[in-house]
Length: 484
View 1 (cartoon, one colour):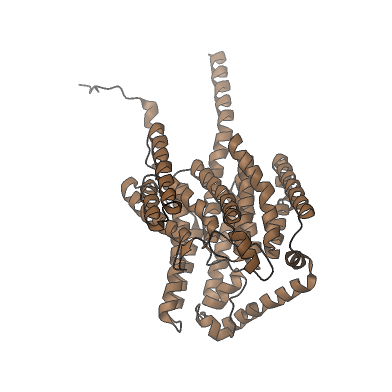
View 2 (cartoon, helix red, strand yellow):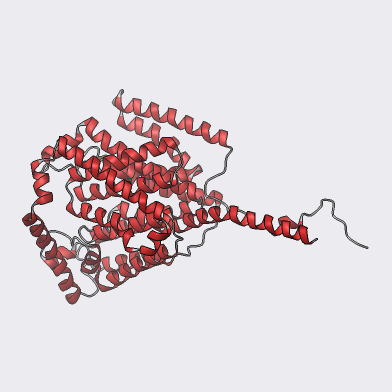
């Protein structure tokens, strides 16, 4: 009359929450180590073919094939490769048509699509900032249709579509894999920045770029010269990432690397000579003092910040005192008249952006801006760049996008992740007052890191509260036993 089951049902397991599927294909640790070792060996062979056999194409193919397979199996690995080559900018390329970071970004996008077909990880895009970024991209595409040079405008609009895809893919990978992916990607970026700068000095690219630059500023990546302000942003964000990882990471080996970055990168910022980057970094480092309650609640993090500032200042001061800066760079950083001229030069496109928005509220388009403004430069400001090129709707969407990111940071529980996310956003906003960054890859990649910091922060917050909860449960059991 009563039904019986062959296997006993555990009622506790019925109420357990099923773990989320990750986009990384889960393999045994031994297999992971073996695959990584094989990848290292194959890449070594590829580099030997490039440098010893002088066959760049064959060596690149040898390196690219196993790397792409690893990206499909482990999107975390793909994200680490992207962060590793991101500091190179467009320096490693082929005839100004193809660059290393662009190729890795394309490989990451293709591997991401293949991985999704295999793993089908569940992800709900709950952050509204991503939807607003999509709306901004859609408006850029629509405004480009009215441009004077349709073909070129569509190419520029497609660049914005690629940037949207990048922020979505980076956000997806971190959200579907957790804090280890966040940590490894940040590690790769710090290591890539230090490695890129070291290789520029080893290969002589840094010296050649400084000789070619009119002010003898350090403005080179591997291969060709690049914009000094962009390079300063890459180094400053790596400096902030090193501080966060030094506070969060427990590995002695990696902490030594972070310490090198903390001592070395401020010196490079001085050699680059970007006034905007230095001002943005100083304001970012002092910005936690504006939040007095949080300073009182987390005095250890604030103390670490002061120690880092002191160490960075001492290292930069010692280098400047012993070797000194180039005369042109020192004049650039200390001459008030040059700073005033730079401000007046940057205010010209800002004023023209306001006038263009009045004449054409829906935007002038990218190439139409030069005809409408009569200038040869774009606005050196993120907000006014959006306003001048794509009109009032783009400016409103961009401002709303930034507000939603601020609200995301506000939701993050107080800890290292909150300070890190706020530091990145603060730096990008202050730097965006001086340099237009809307078409730079690192801007959108680190915006994705800011958005993904919320999940990582709640993971560490739950891990910190779990021992306390277990202790409370044990006390409850003891009390129940006593009453029984």
